[in-house]
Length: 110
Image 1 (spheres, rainbow, N blue to C red):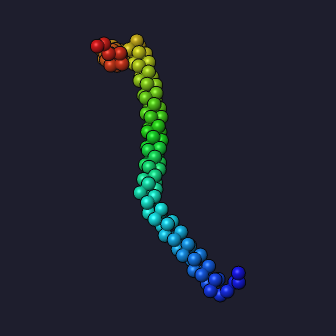
Image 2 (cartoon, one colour):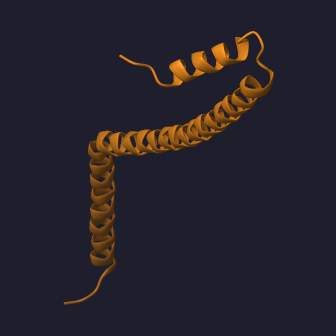
């Protein structure tokens, strides 16, 4: 078998046709996969947003826990000061009344 120009040209044309067919096949596959890829991208974006919101909620919970503890400390300090004042300086009974109101608020009976 001899290698002629026509044979080389036919091989080149066949190879080009195969390459074009593969290119179109790749485009078709990408077109079919696009909705799934878009959905995966959307899911990843939503997961990122959810993770960020969870982090913000954890930060807020930490802040709230700190504020509750600080508030409890202030209330205990106030209760202690009122107790000392009621023992030593409460002529009218107002300090004892305030201390009783705080105690009832902190320990409600249902």
